[in-house]
Image (cartoon, rainbow, N blue to C red; front, side, top):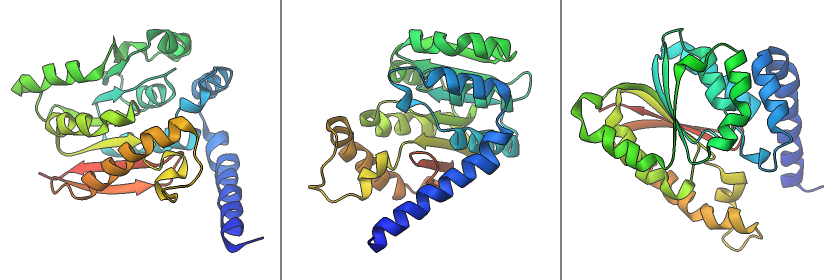
Length: 232
């Protein structure tokens, strides 16, 4: 076994250890139910990982976040994790182009008693963001924004999100390792959809690393989560 193979195996074993000892035993029952429900969906790979959900939950509690946004909902695992972490009067503006997927997880969200926190909008997020940005009262309104949507629009989302979060607030972007492809050689064999979005993710990672308005932290949680804290 090569050194790289040994390292990959060690990483896989470590991830499994974390899930089995620190994540699944502490996973709230509604999140477990939604995760198991989503596992039967044809696009289950799109869901936020359980360790990602746990990370978002504790981050939001540390921040005392109250007013948040989520761009890209799917069946709602990260949305439910956020809703459970927010106070009773917390609010989440949630957007996705597919209401059907959201409604698959909605009964679990309702049973958890947190549906009142969610304002779901079906359709593309950019027109909604543009409308929010046009009204200056929305500038600096949000404590936290989580983005897990179309990777080719990440930079477009960031351009608008930075206006909508307050100084000191955080924007989280999921899939910034993009199945590990961002570290692969240019000619490495990749699945078609992985290769298609790879360059967009690479460009996004490059641009936000140079953005002087934020400080960033990229973490190997799930498929990679990058946190951007607005500093100016």
